[in-house]
Image (cartoon, rainbow, N blue to C red):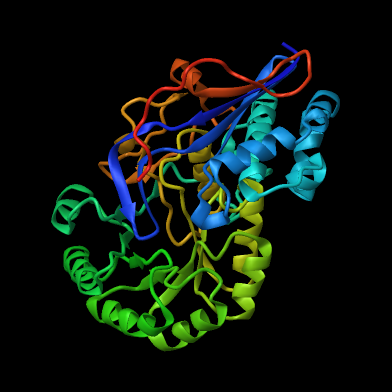
Length: 401
């Protein structure tokens, strides 16, 4: 096979629903792309969320159909892979490949290309992203990293505390009842003690009128951080809240682009960034945002999109092992959400210790398995031409709530 591509629209039913103020999810919604060039395949993924970047699965799919892949295949075919990888690290994926579009389109293509290059060069995911060595510190990567645990609205604090430890960092998804949220914070703080950070993720659900009293209530209950309390881009109000609240502020939905990062720093609107691979346009662009955070004394966490299904999982983990000064790392819950996955081997979290290990290579260390085939929606034939629909019937899944 010379050059070909297959796009999958993956809507795996979730064994357990995940609820937070901005969305309720009962199925995944990822696009997974397999690129093949000269007998080597790489797979990439994006997980668009309209309330985060304004992109949807439909919009990314349409953008991909408009994107000419001839230059992508030409560079993969004609340029030595080590030199191409170095160019992409140095100049950025979009510039090297001449791709324009939203962050999720860029992430989908970048992760597929990086995976393919990693397989050609025999590089594991951490080597692929870090280059000559870890970005944060010169010591070899540790065998495992601790990960945070998330109390969402589908589980009670009592069940969470009884079943989800040990706890290294706790994120509590806010409800529409601040009294309930403060009660959850108090329960968690009483259980974990003073040494474990506790953050409440409001997912843009507070108003400027309610933000300060809500923040004071959570501070008094024992919270350390609040994540994205106000509608995205409320820079002046965020700066005022940060000065007065007594809580540190992490930005997520407001932090999608380098311009957002610069504005946040200039407005003194936050203490930390939530870096997510798909939201921020791919792992290499995400790494640049981490560099911006460090230069300006802003902390950061390596976050995930809910219900990632493939390469995004291992790309985020590789990013975490490259940048080990992260405030915390989210591992996702694919092991809890999906009894069957479309990739092999399955990503693993050590739930006894709540740690994760680097993914085995090469590339992002996973391949599509037979469970992926029913989700294929478009194919780009090796003889060239335009994208063609795949005629297989789609599996029936419950709609995301």
